[in-house]
Amino acid sequence: MIDTKEVEKVIPHRGDMRLIDEISEITDTTATGIKHVTDHEFWHDGHFPAHAIMPGVLIVEAMAQTACFMTLNRIGNNDGKTLGYFVSIESARFNRMVEPGDTLELHVEELGSKMKMYKYTGTAFVNGAKVASATFSAIIDRGE
Image (cartoon, rainbow, N blue to C red):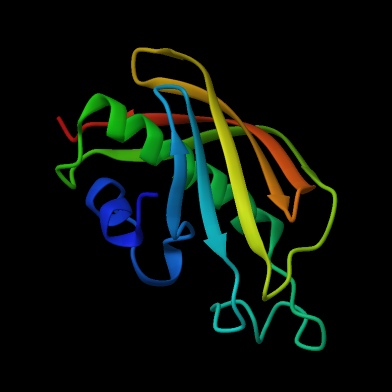
């Protein structure tokens, strides 16, 4: 298990915008990120106050952060200058609401890369049930 401190050594996201707490599994082209969803999230009081649910765009962002960790960890760039930026979200599907108390398992796989461009697929689960999936691309900028 890779904990929060180790995650923050690789990806630049901090505070409310770090949407992965741990990495439970990692290979060169796959990773599983963990996000413990709490009632202290910045969106909790404003995204349907009577029934707080995690915004879908943040679930996709959590997948992207997991993918970014995997790629930056593999290429060895954790200098704080190397960043991953969304280029496209080709498809996203949301199957179930994610609520405080849920633990998201974010399974990502790199589908391929060309130069600085990387393509991924991701699926998010809560208690083994699929809650979301997406295919997305990002550019890795080494700050050069």
